[in-house]
Image 1 (cartoon, rainbow, N blue to C red):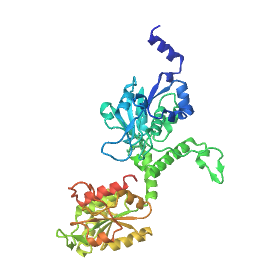
Image 2 (tube, helix red, strand yellow; image 1 turned 60 degrees about the vertical axis):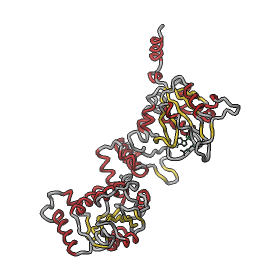
Image 3 (cartoon, rainbow, N blue to C red; image 1 turned 135 degrees about the horizontal axis):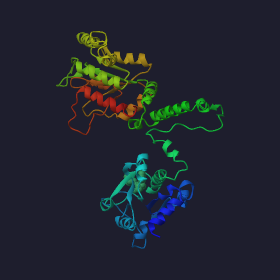
Image 4 (spheres, rainbow, N blue to C red; image 1 turned 120 degrees about the vertical axis):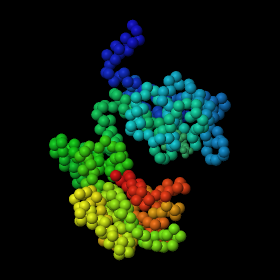
Length: 446
Ligand SMILES: C[S@@+](CC[C@H](N)C(=O)[O-])C[C@H]1O[C@@H](n2cnc3c(N)ncnc32)[C@H](O)[C@@H]1O
């Protein structure tokens, strides 16, 4: 009988999933680490049914000295030891079919569900577990290696990380899970976090299971699950929403939820006085029609609470009113309703203090004042602003002319780091800077 015929008889006799097989080769100085995880649950079942198989390669078996040393001191000095290249090289080259070679490292690209799915198509995967301070970098020049991190934290060694990768990948191998349905419905399957789960009893210590789940109405249950999944993602991992596969009706739900959630806490001020002249003296500058329109449009797009045009010069205030009224109440009203909606966000005020009082009145809270500058005077990071925004309103001030005056900088609670702080050229128009900063602050919120 030919080997091919034997193979087809085997497939015919067995369930179709049996033709999938994956080999994991783990290079580690602690193979015993994997003992118990591979002896229980689904991993054990998969090994017993020959769906997956493991081999362990210990770099110590490729050493020549009595101590079986795999590490040495780092060139250049410093704390800790480094895994030597030779035992690792020999360990890798001893594997007949290493397949895809992964190096577990906090310096790698962060592992996720789509990477797990991609790796599940491989026949063989080799995982290199580092120890000590890491491994001699030249190993990456000898082999085609992909660095993988399991998150922004540091473990003692790559073994725990390798186990995470093995489990996540194995779940995608046909036949590994009881019901294929499970991987399809899980978190990240459609780019969202999964909805919450409940089981009996329906009431525990006065806490009830959501009524809709007991209703038997499958359409309503599906809708509740979808909305809960969107809500979970919005609250815990808003960054995922950018690439998630959203349905047309999801946008309506997210918009309603977002408005409640954010409370439109970010306020923007464009200061025309007091700002700096080229020679560093204080001055007042004229309004720019483009700044009024473009920043108002950004504010509307990002759901900002309000946009204050700040100038104490009465002529300039009247000019701003005329420009805005043209679209809101005047001849252009109704011609471009989108522009009208954006310009309705604009408030014309004389001083920064007036705007602050207005924000206090609207929100009942003292706003946290953040100033912006293209000079190297800011230290405040965007993530801090984002955090504050979840607790109280933030008033974000942009300067015209040659930037906000010293007086304004002194009244702020924080000065934002400049955009492209490492670049010597960063001369942006105020409307460009406002767009970039607003997007970066709210990037993870939308
Ligand atoms: C103590 S760590 C070395 C950390 C290294 N000095 C650094 O700061 O990047 C030892 C080993 O643990 C593994 N490791 C630690 N954290 C990891 C993570 N977040 N993801 C994947 N592997 C990790 C790597 O194999 C690494 O070589």
